[in-house]
Length: 347
Length: 83
Image (cartoon, rainbow over the protein chains, first blue to last red):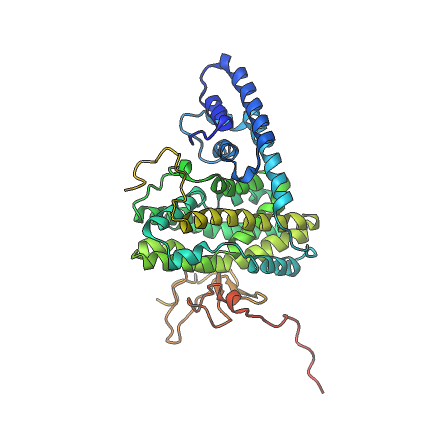
């Protein structure tokens, strides 16, 4: 169970671990009151530690579950209401703040061209360049810790979209995801490759091990995908998100690999990054054209959400990159200093 | 050994998609050979072949075409020959 970061995540943890049916109504009321207050008071939901931690914790019930928490709580009305309340503000903040390019006409060529233009002009912070040229060993470990929140379940949030698409877009998504899951071979699953990289640096690759030490924006990056993926209404956004993710991956991954080589790590550690240089050069074409473009041919009204999903990916992951770089350039750690320290973090 | 990757009764036709301003996507039961005739190991079912000439992973694409601003002519049917 992720540690509480404030009143909402604390109230959620208490409800999820409660074993006394008589206490439940009071706990639910307390959770509802705390989330309404927190949402009202939140200055910036993307960086709100308590709200992002609460949403992340609730979402974990949709993935691997949480130790000590009844699996049936995934569909508990109070938990779903909490998610809905936070999602409403989270999505609104994104709709207000994510810069949107001009919308293309629906279609494969037009949407793919617009997405290549959008992702090619992304001026976000270059974590990859820093990793390649400057990062210390400790910073390289922090980078892996930040990325582990998503990469240990790499591909899962986008897989939610498979049953929600049809035709060409569905086939394209399956083609990409099959490769992400190693063509069905455990040792080649990208999440497994990432775990091997983490272990190569002496990090613990068990799911959720470092969640407590990453800042809210890293949880927001993961929550964004889960929100897009688990709402059928947002199927355009999850398709656009995957396209942007793949389209900004090949070249940075070569830099990441170079950075770990510079620090003296061998192929056991760099394989994850090297594999993504080649894989994502394939995936970006399929994602931009057949998935995102194909979806807009099938459902032209989704073109705005496809572009929104792509732009939101760049925006939120840009903020997450800023969190790393601003800490490092100030000579500080990019991990939360007030968090309970996972065993072995400094080993 | 070089023919081992293609089942004799494979009904999976090879297709090649020319991606605008990007690589050639190849799907199906194919094998890629070096000039000496040796099979180039392929780690995935669908591959992207470099056509900008700058990839560091040739024959595969590594996304470098975007960094150099590689562009292709619009793919259109060939015009009838001039008389």
